[in-house]
Length: 519
Image (tube, rainbow, N blue to C red; front, side, top):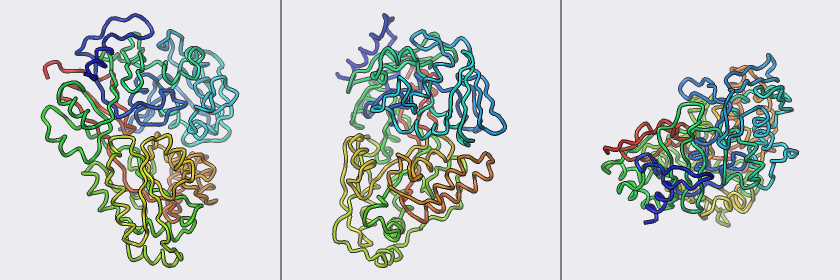
C-alpha cells in the first residue's frame, strides 16, 4: 500500500508549478535503500546522491569511460596554456536552468567557489563537504571575461584538473537563482540543467524527478522517476517481482544467487567500479603506531580466500589502493601477501600483548553492507594470529563518520572509498596526504607527501606513472590499511526496463532508459 501511494503521488507531480499527470507506463519506479544526505554537490557524499543528482545536474565536461577521452557537456570547447596554469572554457549558448535562469560564466564561477571559498555568499561551512577543498585547492582565481567564457587560473600545474572538472561529485553547475532563493535548503530543492528536474522530496518515502522538456541535449524517454525509499532488500525484491518497482540498487553479494533464479528480473553487472574496500588502522594510536603490528595485520588476512568466498564473483582482490579502472593502475605491485606464521612473528617482534580486544568498526546503513561476510572473515583470520577482535556495527553513516573515521573512538575500521575521478590523485592524495581531511588513518610519511605533491604538479604522464607507483609501494610497506577488493557495479531491474546502464561511478544514465509495456 505504501508503494502504491508513493507512486500515485509521483504521478500527480505536485511540484513547483502545475503539471499534467505523468502516464503510469512512463514513470520509472526506482528502489533505493535510504535517502541521500543531500542533493547539493557541495554537501553530498553518498552513493544514493549520485543515482539521483546526476540526472538533474551537469558538469562542464565528462569522461568517456571506454576511450578515456574528455567529452563536451556544458562547455563546448576548452584549452590550456603550455604551463597548465590557465584553462579557458567556452560555454554552450542558449542553455537554461530548470528555474528559467540562463547558464552563464557567473553561474559556473559561483558553483565552484561556494565549495572552497569562505568569502562566497553560498559557502555554508556547516554543510560544505571537505572534497571541494581537496579537489580545488590549486585554484588561484576564476575569471569571467564574458557570459560564455570561464577562465580557471591555477596556483601551480595540476595533473588531475580536467578529471576533477569531469566528476559529478563536486563539479556540477547549479543555479545561482535557486541558491539565493532556497539558501541552505538547496540540497532538498536542487536546480540544474540536466534532462530531469526536481519535483519533490518526501522524507523517508520518495524523491520524484520529471522530464525537463526544454533540455538542451537528447531528451529523456521517461516522463519521470520515482525514487522509493525502502530499507529492506527483501521488500524491494518482492516489490520488483510484483511489478511495483522497476529498478533496485544497494544489492549485496549474498543476495545475488537467488536473484539470478527469479523470472522477470535481470541482474545488471557493469565492469568494475572505481571503488576500493579498505580495512583501515589508526596509525597514531597503540598498537597501530608500530609498523610491525600494521604489517602483521596485512600478513594475517587471506584476501584471496575471503574475497572469492564472499563476493560471489562480484569483486576482484585488490593489489593496492587503485581500482584497475583507474589511470596508472599497476598489476605488478607487490603487496604484503598472506602468511600467518610471518604475521605471528611480526606481532611477537613488536612486543604486542593481546591484553585487550581491538575494535573493528563498520557501518551497516545500506543493504550491500548489511550482514557483510567480509567483517567476520577478517575477524576470524586475525584472531588466528593472536589478535583479538571486537566487532562494532554502526547503523548511521553520519555518526560513523564523526566517531570512527574523523574521530578516534575505534582502533580499526571498515570502509569503501570511491575514487570519483579516473585520476589516482583523488584517492591517494585524499586518503594518504598527511594534512588531508580524509586521512582517516592518521598516517604521516613525509616522503609520501613529497611524492604526492610532485605527482600533482607533473604533467608528463610517464613521470606521473612512476611517481604514483612509488607512492603505492611506500603505502603498501607502511601498511596504514589493507586493501581488500574492488567491487563491481550491480543493479537489478525488471525485464520491462530497456537501455538501463550505469558507469563505474555507480551512476545510472536515465535519459536513455525506456519502458516496454508488453513485459
